[in-house]
Length: 443
Image (cartoon, rainbow, N blue to C red; front, side):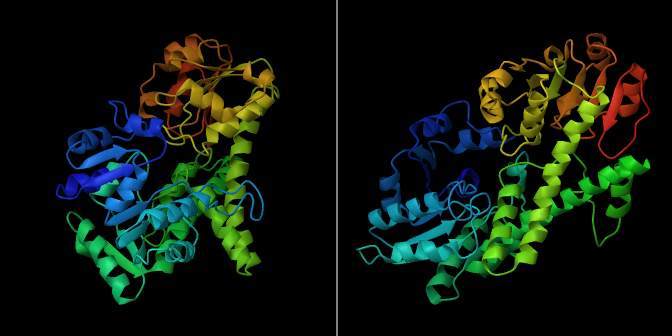
């Protein structure tokens, strides 16, 4: 919405939410989401044609186009628990729109939702008592956290799905015209509703599949003394494969990949395709295994016990340049280490101590062994091992000779992102464990 406000200053954009605390944060000088470049855009447009408000019903009545951007988490209860998408927030928005709308509206699905959800929205809207006309479009987002502003400025594509009816075509063209203010028309892809809804799930599933594939090979590389980065580079040169999303790591996280794959698997099962469902579920299973395998390597390297040993965890966000921790591999690693009775000290440059503790969610006994440091150096002081779990650029610039001097010996580094200079670390004296490669060890 901020990007639309920036690129189309003649369009009034209202971002509304019933959560007053959240809206207050968007109206403050410190935005609740860390995203490089977003602060500048919000400050440029806020108060001009971009407004943040809790006046949800008023905004619905005034709007011509309504973007539905609510959360669609994985269900934790009932039918489909653990895999299906929880659509209660989508339904709530649809009912509120139906109650408040007094003029025709274009409803745009922005949330990641299962295919055929537009049918649910249309059914609820059609049941409103005023006979107001609605058109429903699907406009899934393909931006990546940490590079979202750049992705929006120059997207690979903008996908818009609509019904192949006269009203649907007019609505679709209305949204196309807005994006065409700054996106070349050839990059605006139009489809039917169902293709658009499904494309988002499939795109995330394919990307996650590549990560799980290279992570499975990382284990084989360690066993055979191959180097996973060299393998990835070699196969990435094949034009049929390409180099993207072949970076081995401790595992993927974020708000989309796992949730969308589980939902895709559930949809396949729902439509009588159990083999397809199992195939996609295996991508998530491989990711979970990779996270467990990382923790197991720490325990085994530290002489089969980490009880009462201090482990410094550098990075808690699921990737660099974001404060998003949803499904972060660090959560699982911290929980597993605490379960092994380790003393875990976490540092992340953008994630708060409150968020870290809430995400780990450990019991009282484990909670006493979890602490949050104010700097990387503080976290590493006295540690038996350092585990790098987020690829923050700042970690590459750390003074590891200083860190080594303050650690318990032998000092270990477990690089879950293959971020650091392993040869240099080994030369200092560290014992280094990396993903998908065997590193010459320090003393």
